[in-house]
Image (cartoon, rainbow, N blue to C red; front, top):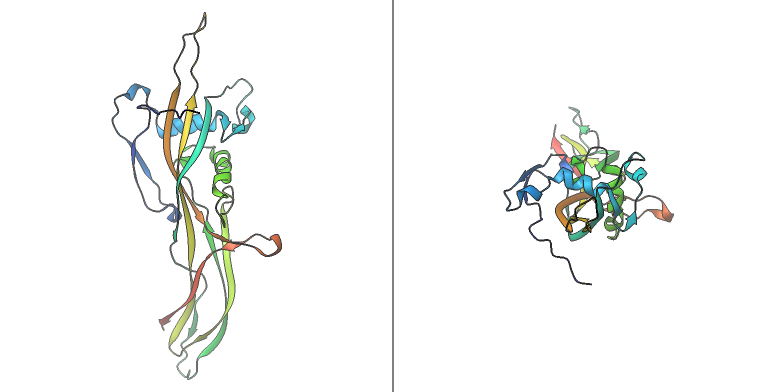
Amino acid sequence: MARRRFRNKKVRYVAIGASLATGAAAVTILLPSANAAEEKTPAQIMRMCQRASVLNGKQQSVRDFNGAFADGFESDNCDFVETKFETFNGPAEKASIDFPNCEPNATEPSKVSISWESEVAQGKGKQISIVQGASAGLFGALSGSWQVHKSSLDMTTNTAKAGSKDAVEVPVGKVAHIEFTPKMQRMTGEWRVRIDAREPTTVLNGSPEQNFVLEDVVEGPSMLPGAAGAPGVVDGVAKTVFEDC
């Protein structure tokens, strides 16, 4: 099948922001275009995607996006096409309380058992997050693409946890705690929205096919497999940190 060309329809933007894992917001700035009258904002394109007749190969009903009986579809098709997948280290966080060995008469290392737990947020999509009330449906549509990769958490899950109990010797004059650095994953891709061409009728003018493309980035924790089918835990590195009293 011949590949459609997206002629002068692509929304161009500059995204400014910190990693999604930190919860920092991103800012989207539209740049000038030769066909500005036909351009759509990111929010408009994502709404058209959410309300597509076919979303990532699945036929929708208006109930899928909480539409009323009289509501129609705003586009004919929307697909997410992955263009890049990468792993990286998330921010290191303190995962336990402090365990001091700071008594004035202490002469030996203190042996302690430290229980720790760290909760890692599922990353929000840069574009999905700007569509109010639509996150669940569009994140659900992404789950298939996301879970193609081994150790990927379901995109509809908000958070995942890591934790353990470690035996630690705390030297005299030191305070110990556990620090956890999660392993994260980032998927970059494009939402491709299409409105089919319409033939003219006796009461309506015809219209050509319209295509809109919008890049999105989603992040989330890399997961270790669970035992006997149980949910896994977040992959990462835990280490003991010692500080002076």
